[in-house]
Length: 446
Image 1 (cartoon, rainbow, N blue to C red):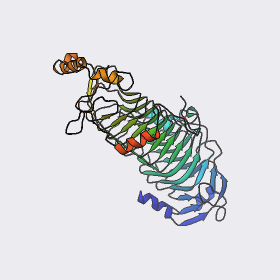
Image 2: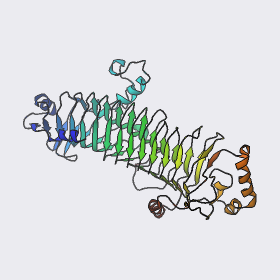
Image 3: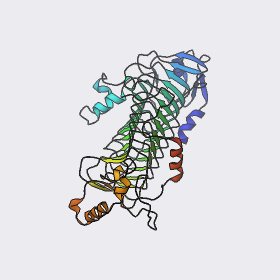
Image 4: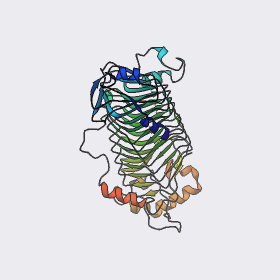
């Protein structure tokens, strides 16, 4: 990251309007490893290609405006260590995907497993395309687009910082905010509004998406075939899926994110992932436990219609130390008759006050069981939960496994919230389950 910031310190060699009449002329005249300064104003450009390591720097997002002719990509970078900073970009062409791209343009063989996906997601029109242009940098740029914002194709170590991107109000009329195609990319301190996907990654190692905001698209962050990802401290609102890491991914950390008012908050499939410290509120489903050999801990799931959904066939994941508070249903499972043992979570609807010395309730909690799932919603359910009949039946099930039903059981539910300060703040903020309305127009509509 530090090496990319040095790209903003290159000496100015050409000033557009003073030393060269157009940006294209400035690119022709500027020596490598220098800066082209673009003063305040509006500049009409057409399919600009940057084939040498230079920095294009404007006077500010609201002062320097580069406007494409709406026939294709505005700027294509084909050299490593290029940079764009302090300006706005618009006038992107209408091609959202690369469906009409010829086979020769795609950098993997047509018989490859990811040929079609690379073609569709990596070759549409965009404000900026990095094509084999690694070690490059985007800083303090605003983009308005009805197709794509930034595409990085086979360009390792691209950093995108302080990007503000406005897509389409209807998700199906736009496409990708940032697309990392075979490129390790850092996206940070940025904001995405509308379109189909905020940050999309395909076949990527070491993607980082942090400290950013996504609102009003179908998917906030969407990863396909990725490894070693970090998705942290992002705020995602009004999406169809907040954060979706699909099943062929591995070794991903999803930590410290806030997802609210969305269809599904966080879905992390694949293997050996870590999902921790996220706060998921007022979604249709907060956290979807999928994949295998992953750890889900210290997440707060509150005021969702469904707190957690277990979608796995085999109970290989560890789900512990989570706060499940005031959801319509604490948890649901797939149709498979599997017992999932999730130990040490706080369930606000768990009946009982007797504690063990370690701080858990004496009575185990079965949030998918016919009795426990009704506690807090159905009158007298708490009384039934403590009845002698239910108590004897639960004891008998411990000795006769054939009497057990599938679902989730917490044998040692926490008596108090794990993240008490966060739970108190959430309870002070929300007063009902399900999606609430906000005062802006960036909403996902299915």
